[in-house]
Length: 230
Image 1 (cartoon, one colour):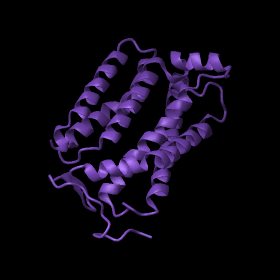
Image 2: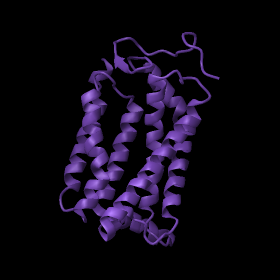
Image 3: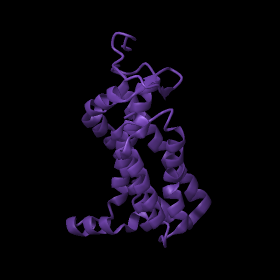
Image 4: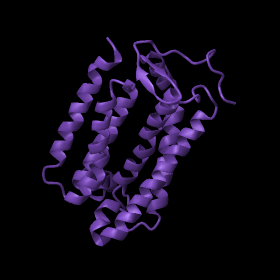
């Protein structure tokens, strides 16, 4: 069975589509729902359209699906009002709903594997000591860009953007968000790199500096064919 015909990505895609459809039914705030789920609305079709040329590892597919569900739930309820977050707040005596913090941890944890996969398959960084720090830096940069998008939404939307920002009165919310993404990316790289490498080795693709595509040739380690960067 080739990578293109794996059933797991298909099941995950349908699960995300079903959750997205359910979340669109009576969300707390329609604008917030769109702003939070736009990454899913754009990302899922993009993955489907490029799948035959660039199939993803099973690990990345699972993580992207979980991240999509986190975004979908946050979009439906708004991050400050997710019931599970309210339960955690009350159970542990917290001063705010922590679902927003969890969402930003995921914002680093999942993109770290995505960035790592793209770099391993489209650049000479596989096996390089620079792979891990560049992956984490890319995730932190994305988190900073996302915070600027939130800032732009606040400037243009005024009070209408409060549900999207989910600051809950914390003046340090932006810094906390980026710190959570940094922690998530670091933990992801440290805990999942070996598993990710094994799945990359089993994926039937070949990599090049300009891109990667399905060729039917098993992916093998680049050691011996291209010297690692220092």
